[in-house]
Image 1: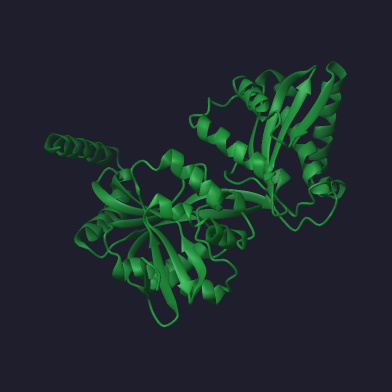
Image 2 (image 1 turned 90 degrees about the horizontal axis):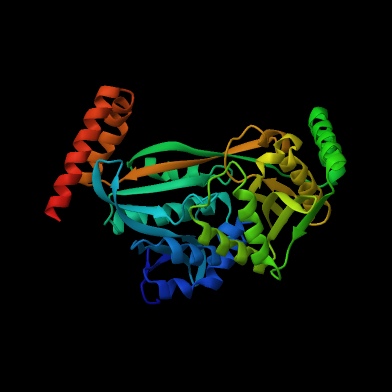
Length: 392
């Protein structure tokens, strides 16, 4: 048995990774499991988490759980342990899957597992936290994909272990899969009015400007195009990126890996729209899109999206187009299928866990519906914070 690895039963053993050094040595195992996941690899690979931890560790503790069957790693839970004030109520020790708003999903890595194997392995890892490692108050798992049944399997394990929990909706995900046809067929499958609007706006803008499009893949001029993107963003409806340094580092990583499709639309050599797509494992993920509002009447975003759709379908031969997160109305026309990412909060069977569960499940929903009670809650939270600060 290896260091920090212990047997759970006759079939499985667990190893817990607590240091950055040990995490960095996991690259091969990690990417092997993530690669077998078949989707969202750019946000599940070791490089993504390595980059994330460089920017967002915030003094949190690693608690990465690897499940072995014999000598083979068959599942991995990229946990982190945080100390925070939960919903303004009390300071807690919280276990969560590593990630934040930049993570389209957060998930366990199961490799090639049948549904039954996934259920057993997930149960083993969670029971380890419930029965063995108990130094936590809540586990909060956000943005779990429903299409892989992870969310429902977790919920089933929690119920069978008599744990209190709260589930909630995180975000919608619009997508189109099983694309095994040309871009021409893709657009033929869209609404006629949608197709006509794109062609109409193309003709309008081409009458007034010399229009061209570029799609960048390599890193020879990436820095130039990152600056161009910022220039367009400054003229768009979007606020400046608060995490700009991290986002640009991820763009560099995606470019190096050959995943990045960095597109620009120009009017008379002026960049008026830009989009960043990620293409990996025959799947195209629409990462970000924006345009100069001065050109809004020409729908430059739709024009650029139409050209990128043609490219990824005909040249990259993707079988899926995925908008990642959000329920914006326009996504339905491009990608008519929808699924959800859901979250679940699990409360430990200790005194703090019982109290938090009672307040969160029974009391706070009532308080949140009442302005008077909400004011009282905020006042109490303020007093608790002042008391805590004075003790510190």
